[in-house]
Length: 303
Image (cartoon, rainbow, N blue to C red; front, side, top):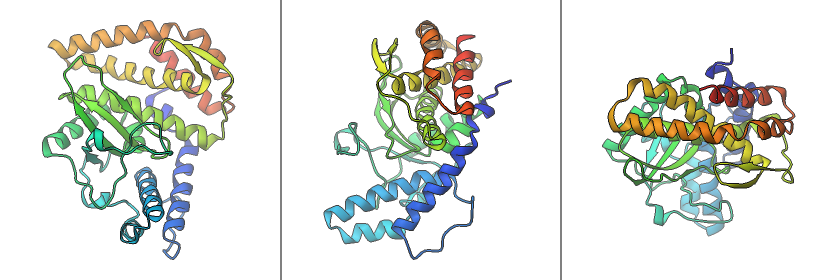
């Protein structure tokens, strides 16, 4: 049986996290004692990328004080202001969307932890804590533990409004998202974005190179998309469907109706990908990764 623990437990990802964390720390702090083999965690991996981006930006700007701060804080300062959750300590911040930079490293806005970072207000930290707990109860704890370490909460919206969320490959383990004042909806969207981070790491860890010349029709975008984006959608949306099906057992009222409508919509969209998804999976050279992508898709289709 392809349990959620099996889906997310891809051993090459752990090796990737440790090896890249070591390389980043060695680059920023070459005089520091290297960690023991296999001791770096997924959180270390995420925060090391924040420190690397911050240090590089400071160096380019000639800001010696900020560069030195990152050298002294390979966790980008997160340890002192993180919060405990069901999946480990997390950093929850609320940057203003209009103030987020855009640069050649990302087509979308992003945020890098730094000396001026402040944690989110207590009620938003509590919302995030409850969301992580909701996801963990549904079996997604391992996914969020390793791939949703830094949570950037953006705009507050009403239930039913369009929620924008995204990740960027230069900051693995970080998610950016709008939110409503409900932990179950936040958990659903955390799972979606963490799924994208997981797949990026899985492709890198297994050395899979997906051709950008092959395209498939995406029912979510209503357009032809490269295989990379198509496979990402056919992984992340099924994960939210599996979570939503579980969450429906413990919700009522408007939230229950909202989630029911969401699951019905996703069933219809996913059904149209069955044939193309089988073809797209042929582009995945690693057996373990291909099997996991197929299993999540198959389980969601069966809901």
